[in-house]
Image (cartoon, rainbow, N blue to C red; front, side, top):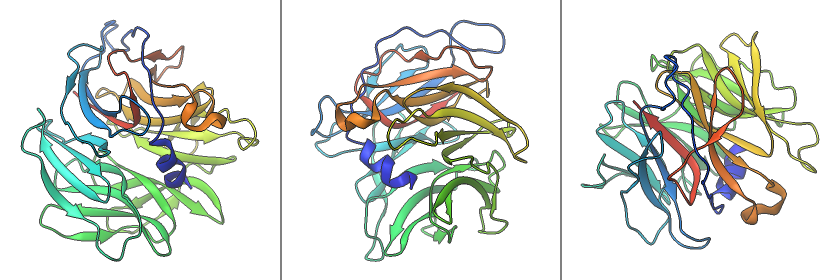
Length: 303
């Protein structure tokens, strides 16, 4: 299951040092927008949230906490950031001020929550949470309403641009694949038809593609994931890059590039070198994102 492996990934430290070229449709060499991510200085210490321009400039620390804070996501208007702190969901201003609690797990849940995703209309946040019988996808509305969306085991939700559907990692007979389901829980169906196992979907802003992590057949002994994009009907599929364990995090606001986390040697666990990278939707050599030393887990990219 994705969420279990993703949870284990939170202990990994990322050192991001290389330079970055842009992938703008206009041919500009400078990527546009701003990225938020979580980072920790050392294994075993609390993680904080940072923002940085997509070209690696203007790095800014937004939180100072002794506890882990992870999974930061931009609001659709870019004025707020939601994030996870243990078993709770928080919201703060884009500059890190005015943090406030949105929701805390009750007695029904048995673990921390993961993978928050803000709906395009700004009214809901989807996330993965575990009941006694396993992980499922939920939505939290700002009026306080909590809804379980999926019944099959699943995690890592990602909204469609219309806000009417969610892509998520689902399990079917013990095999993970990428599913799409209505935000009301209807129309659940497999879109990636995983050759081995597909996970970590991220829906493109233009609505045409879903980026995903695809595992190789012998990944338990030597993991060499690929970062693939798949069309919504599942008929078109392209591999953009391969190597190590790959976790798609976000699309560029213009849908021309994908931000992802690569674990170079996943068999080494927390000691493995990891980095965030950006790769063009046309493929080619991924470039690491500067200015984000110590990043781990998910990230979010706003225009």
